[in-house]
Each structure stands twice: as structure tokens, then as C-alpha cells.
Amino acid sequence: MRCPLPISSRRRILCVFPAYTPSFGTFSHAYPLMGGVKAFMPPQGLLVIAAYMPETWECRFIDENIRPASARDFAWADAVFVSGMHIQEGQIHDIGRRAHAAGKVAVLGGPSVSGAPEKYPDFDYLHVGEIGDATDRLIEILDRDLARPAAQVVLDTKDRLALGDFPAPAYEAVPLKRYLIGSLQFSSGCPYRCEFCDIPQLYGRQPRLKSPEQMCAELDAIISQPGHPAVVYFVDDNFIGNRKATREMLPHLVEWQKKNNYPLQFACEATLNMAKQPEILELMRQANFMTVFVGIETPEADALKGIDKTHNAAVPMYEAIETLNSYGLEVTSGIILGLDSDTDKSEQNLIDFIDRSAIPVLTINLLQALPKTPLWDRLEREGRLLHDASLESNVLFKRPHDTVVSSWRRAIAHAYAPEHLFERFKHQCDVTYGNRIVTPTKGKLTFTNLRRGLILGFNIITRVGLLSDYRRPFWRAAGHALKRGQIEAVFNMGFVAHHLIRFTREALRGEHNASFYAAKAAEAEAQRQRSWWENTRRRFVPEREAA
Image (cartoon, rainbow, N blue to C red):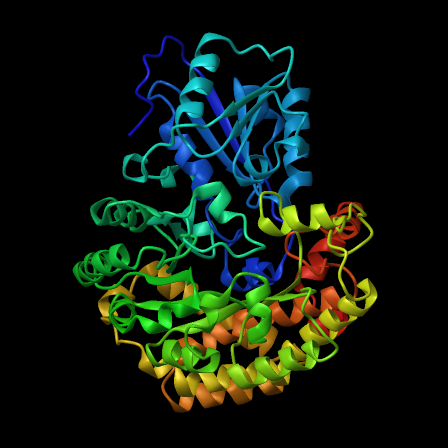
């Protein structure tokens, strides 16, 4: 649905999504292998806001991960809407400055401002919370007056729009072919209250739901766009937050896939206790789910109690991972170092876990306190919140800061040493990939997929298989997959490993923070100072030269 208010004026709204700081999870080094891919995933929240605007208002959507908003874009607009996460804080401020330089009113919403509105005194309007009554008040104000207010106006959502009343995201406003993966939302909120997580505070503990029909209509909109991504990620905070609803939705997803000859693969994030849900797992297999991101956080069972994550121990951890693999689900995992419970043995325990679990992709971060989390509140009481940009985290660890950072460096160096990474991919060939359903060829034989496959195949052979210094472990893993007829696995491990290895080497050179939630300001500034040619060379040069 669109905004139901009566509207008297015509407005032009420029929606700008800020660029991400490079991270393990956005796979930026893989984009040049893909042919035309420029960004990770379409931003759901701002696309929903764009779709909610009154029908008579024009909206222009720009994702600065694809291209920067130009002076002409700002001149066109009556108002500039921005949304983003904490990691994008610097870029958010920059967009606000450009909007004001163009004489336009600047509006900020989304998760970062909802969690910490005090960070953004420079915006004219702050939209705190989800789409709802605050959104309608904002539209009323802008319909009446486009002048910048004398003082900042904070609009706080008290009555959220039901998820079932959400408009379909304005997918038509973005070039989906420029994204590595697509995005889709079925539910919002999570029943658990992990100490470090802000989701329950921002979106609630009782998951709210879209209807299966609504979700399938959004999938129709995605595949109607030529060149759409082959993989769609469910951005739900916890895919099994409401197990009953997920179980009832999945048959609709299976039928949609069958009707359309399985044009998509799916991925999601969930808690590890989904291993106790065999009916859901089998339906996910039938719906062509390939990957599930699980916040394992730590392999130390006692440490899970300290961060209110005991549901991870509902099933023995290795047994749970094996169960997910048996349904064709490759596990990716979030790991945190710097917990209060960490000891001198924690680093080795993590390395042992990496090797034994054979999870290929792990995002290993230092603990970072986010506003509106129990962790933030506790550390604030204990006087352990830091505000030193030269440090890798805003947490005063129980162990020396340099010791924790050194542990992180050794852990990522081990995890993404090419020999170790490709061995874990070989293990997935044996225990995971063969358990996936065989989908109809008809759904894959499109011009876009053929073109994409040829470009990706050529780039993997040349950049990974010939020019990289990790070509030997790659070919060993590729040969292992090809003997099992797993051609797609060769493509997947090639582009994923290429990113992870290159990003790790950059991180070990000090170019990235030890936390996805804190931007590496020095490297961002260095990137701005480097010439266009140097930045391009660093993206494309063979790794042995760049290392």
C-alpha cells in the first residue's frame, strides 16, 4: 500500500543509500569476476519507503555502492532521504552535507539513526523506528512545506505499519543486475535477546509476518527484471523466529519455484537450533535454499551463557552443523573475539573449531557494543565503553587490547590461508553439495545466466586459476568437485575464495578494522587520496603483486 493521506502538492524525493565500507561479508573483491556487478544487495528498507511515497510524488533511487548521487540529482530533488547502518555513519553524514550544499532538506531514517539518533545532529528530520505513523507525519510536513526547519525535528514511530501492509519494495527503481544477490523479507524481529544484538530493541521480539502471497508477488517482481541476481537472500532477522509461520510459508515457496522452473536459489540467516526442525529443513531443501548464516559467535559452550546465546547449545554444535549440511545447506558463521569469557585458550579453540566444522566462510569480528543492546547498557554501567577511533573496538576488553587484536589476526590468517580454505570447500563437496535437489535445466538456461557463467568462468580461470598465487589449492579443490559433477561448486568456491583471501591479506596489512561495525577511517581516507588508476590496479592486479 502507498501512503493513504490526502496530498496537495507534488514533490520529488531523492532516496540515497550510502556506500558500504568494504568487509568480509560484502564480497567486493568478487564483483570484477562477475561482469557488471557493482554492489552486494538491494537495500530493502529505503526501497520500501520509496514505494510508500504518495503516488503523485516522483522518487529517484540511487545506491552509492553503484554510483554516487550527482549534483544534478540533488538539484532535481525537493527532499533527500537517506538510510543506513552504523558502519555507514561517515557516508551518511557526507550525503547530508551534499544535500544541504544543494539547498535541500535532508531526512534520515533506518537502523543507525533509530539506534543512536544523537549521532546525527546535522539532519533536518530524523525518522526513528520503522515505517508507520512517523512516516505519515513526515509526508504531511513535506507536503505542506519544503523549507529546512529552524531546529532538528525528530519523528518517532509509535504505531508501526503491519508487515502485511508493507508495499512491495520499489525493485523497479534499481538495476537488479548490478547486485551480487537479491533481497527479500518475510518476517521482522527475533524472540531471542543475545546480549550484543540490537534487533529485539529495534524490531521487537515477536516476529511480524508478510503473507506467503505477498512474498511470492515480490519474487515475481524480482524475476520480471532482466538480469536479476540468481540468489535471493531472506533478510529476516531470524528465518525461524516464528517456526510455525515459516513451516506454513515454505510450501508456497516450493510451489512458486516449481511453477517458475526454479529460477532462484535462496539463502537466509537463522539460529543454530534450526537443526531441531527436520520438517522445515526438508522444505528449505525442496525450495532450493543453499546457504544459512548462523551466529555461532563462539565454540566455547560456557561462553554462550555470558552472551545469552544458550539456544546455540540446544543441539551439540558439530552435530547441528552436520545436520544442516545433510539438507544441502552450507553454513556460514559469525564469530566474535573479545568476549569477557575469552582466555588464552580461546584462540586455539576457535582455530580447532574452524578446522573441525569445515565451515568455509566465517566473519570473525572483535566484539563491538552497539547502542540499544544489553551489552551497551552493561558496559556503560561498568565504565567500559571506549570512544577512541584509533582502537579496533569501542569495548574495553578484559584482556589487553593488543592481545585480542593479535589473536584476531592469527585467527583470520589461519581461516583464510588458501590451503585451509579450499580444504574446507572440498569437505563441503563431500557432505553438503551432493544433498541438494536437482532443479530443472529450463529455469537456468537463460541468456543472462549463460552470459554470467561465461564471464565468471573466464575470470575464475584466468585470475584465480592462472594468475593468483593460490591457484594450486584452487585446482585441487576444483578437481575434487568436478569428479563429483559439481560444476557450480567450482564457480562458487572460486569467486568466494578470491574475495576472502584478498580481503584477509588487506586486513592483515592493517587496511580494515577487526570489526564489521567500525569503519577503518584511515583506509577510507587513503582510498580517497589514491589516484583512480591506483585504486583500479588494486582491484585487478594479480594477488601476488598486491600482497
